[in-house]
Length: 256
Image (cartoon, rainbow, N blue to C red):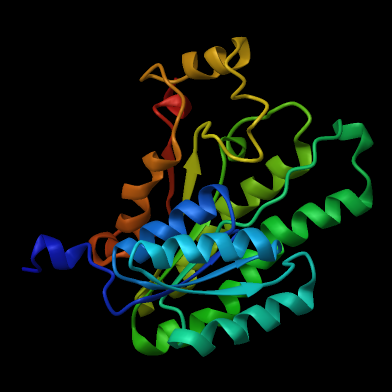
């Protein structure tokens, strides 16, 4: 039987985290590094990305960075190649990059739709497709996607984003079906309301923030720190028998 400390350890593993300059991606990157993984952080904003890498290193972790725009298909291929240079082929892929413009559904243009799908759905799929062969050859890998409450319910002014996140949950199942027999598990995390750049308008200390908390069973909104445990679990040997799942880390909001 594997000792518990070893079961959750990521020592000797490598990880690529997209959207790692802020919010959930940055939290997950620092968590993986703390658990022992060598982490490549990827995002568009070079300045914020450098700050995230510096923070990981200051905490004793191993980190490098790749500046890229995942809305451009050629950048996906470049990132897949660059991510292997620093620490070897990634054992863990975290697809946390996302965009959420908020026009009314009737005002969503083709350009807006294509932009959302390119970052939120296309990039996770094609990155996984590029990195999975090396994971399968080694007989072990982890792909962690970020889904959303909107995978199961409609939010106003967020139609394209909601569709993309429903697609993420479906894609998670498809990749799990394809590769889990080779040791490459794929799961998704669906957070509740946590303070990020996308949810800033909720966390204003006012009625909207209180109403969001009331939708949970624990009567509070989430914190980024609430995602640390599930991140290590899904990235480690502890989740060997968990695949194809969208796990809601939301204080019971999805069960309300």
